[in-house]
Amino acid sequence: MLAAVRRRDAYANLVLPSVLAARGLHGPEAARATDLAYGTLRGLGTFDRIIEACSSRPVRRIDPSALDVLRLGVYQMLLTRTPVHAAVSTSVDLVREQSSARATGFVNAVLRASASRSLDGWAERLTAPGTIDALAFRHLHPAWVVEAFADALGDDRERVVDVLVADNLPPAVSLIAVPGRATVAELVEAGATRGRWAPTAAVLEAGGDPRRVPAIAQGRARVQDEGSQLVALALTRAQVSPDVAARPWLDVCAGPGGKATLLAGVADSQGSVVLAAEKHAHRARLVARSVHGAGLDAAAAVVQADGRSGPWPPRAFGRVLLDAPCTGIGALRRRPESRWRRRPADLDQLVPLQRALLEASLDAVVDGGVLAYVTCSPHVEETVAVVEHVLSRRSDVHVEPAVQLVPDVPSSDRGPYVQLWPDLHGTDAMFLAVLRRRIGTHA
Image 1 (cartoon, rainbow, N blue to C red):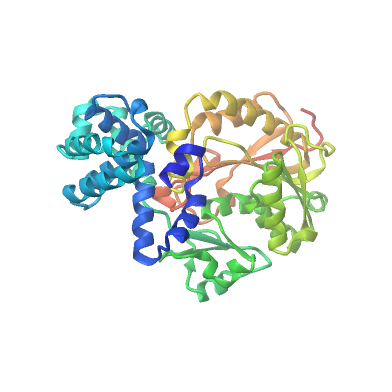
Image 2 (tube, rainbow, N blue to C red):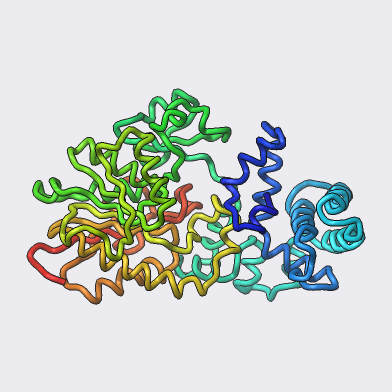
């Protein structure tokens, strides 16, 4: 799995099931393999710094297969209860199979040197005390991500540590009972427990394969983070006039379809319909598959379109969801490989795109209608700064308090916005802003 992620930028959660099946792993063995793979991916940047400190060459000059083995070995020695001799022995055997016999001595020497200190000991040697870099190293995050969390949390270091710790814990499997197609009660009957916040949510506390839940196998329920459910449901809870309520809804960046399916379920119960737009063809197909699997074809139409120039008239929709493309640093606990793929430079492309999408999406909202701007990132530049930039250019839109649309979720307010956190809410770090189009005004 490490090789697949390295060679072709594969997503770990998509590769893992096929790897486990191919090796015939299940139960405790599958759990152990998952921990080894995910734990190694979470710590790549930190482990590489340790490997370089113990090696005569930079990591970019180490054979890639041998580097996979080294990373796996360092994770076992520093962050699991695997004895050093066992981790070194199995790593040497593995590199002999995966790379070459000539690399065995090198791997043996680097791993034994890596084991000479604890993770805290390496942090003391390789970072300056009390710095963001030291915090990031110890908690297996890039420093720029830790800085982003600190900015969003008002530089509250205790809270930053809490978020980093939560990011490194395996998340529970969160399910959604698609509105009008399944109920939380039947998910509970199948072995789940009720979610903490969303009325559509359930959790498989013990893990396991969600497809064993009948409603999941039938397409009437899905795997979806409870935070994603909350921000989508918030849009459906905003009060609108009867005229606005009669308008169709729009999901601007709908792929892969989880929120579009949720919205279609609610819209169907209210006599409305959803237009789900997605720029990329393969993701548009995923949206169509998700909607069809839930039996909601009559309540949702899927179109391949760029949200900045969609084939719809202005002021056509009563409710609009913009789940904008973002760095995704609020969902790192579910995507262990993502924390080392993203770079601060990514914001140079993402922020202008987010602004343009928000501008165009607001043009699609009818007077009196509402828009939910959502990201799975708490980064200030992708969240508050994007909303306030667009608001500074328009007089036809105002912000409404979003927290009233996520009732009974404590400590989620960030001014007029909502910010969820994995340590407080057990969800991804979703951001939500709710904007309303003024009546009788022009941008």
